[in-house]
Length: 371
Image (cartoon, rainbow, N blue to C red; front, side):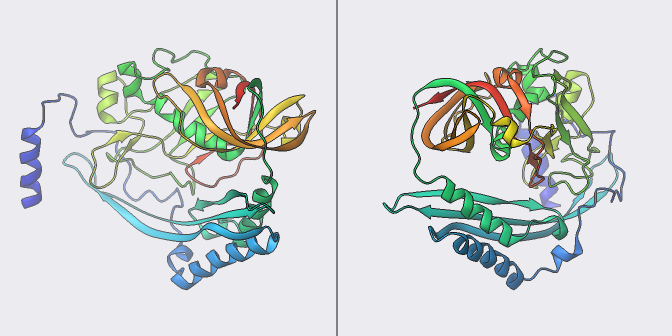
């Protein structure tokens, strides 16, 4: 009773907002279990079992190459929990889910004591989907060693090949531009572009709240509305924006089931399981350029959500005549998101489902790269 009284008191003090109201339709069906988000084997994992997985990643990293003398981070984590949801207008909804997360960061050191790191890992709903700890540790070590002895390059415009992790990081940032509320307020560079071609013809970006075993999937959103599969970019065309209930009513449309929230927050608009559809190109094909940059790691933040301007500290490998020539560090990669989307000229086939945002490798035919 005291919780309800306090909520009413706070509501009376808040500024009047005619769009702030509880949804009255579009609710999920109680008991929806089709998404397969629960794994009893994850529930049964003991602390000792998780600890052994973390130690296995560390051992594999150190045993793969003598230049890997320690790990910067080694983590094994599991979760099992549930959500119950009820309002005055809709049904009582419940869901439960599990995940296991494995991450390892290897540090390689050269003869002069200079270090380079690499992180491997991911999050999965089911234990059977998780990658083998020893494989993750060994790969982290190999990639860290490859980055030893980096150089810098002079500023120039060249093709940029994005590693899948970098591509996923980029599309997670641009997801905010597909907020229907941001489009209405003209604070998104995609405002007024619905139905327009904004990307290369082969580019399709999807938010899938219904993907089976998806790390970001759920039967209902933070307002109890049923989640759905929403194509944001369909073969290069801006196909849809994301909405919660309030934003959809204000725009004269319906919610896409994209209200996200914690138990102590008000709803806001956000994606569920966001992914860029894979293509057919192998990495070797994508590296087949006269001169370019294979972008594998990023540093300081530099993305403007209003304009789409993109500029990040970066590290990776310089490419000459289709071959990796040498590692590169302490440079900047810059462009504008709309230019980047339009200039995607190759999409990899190497999609790895390792979290709530996934992408294959991408090649952007020209970006500014340099000191």
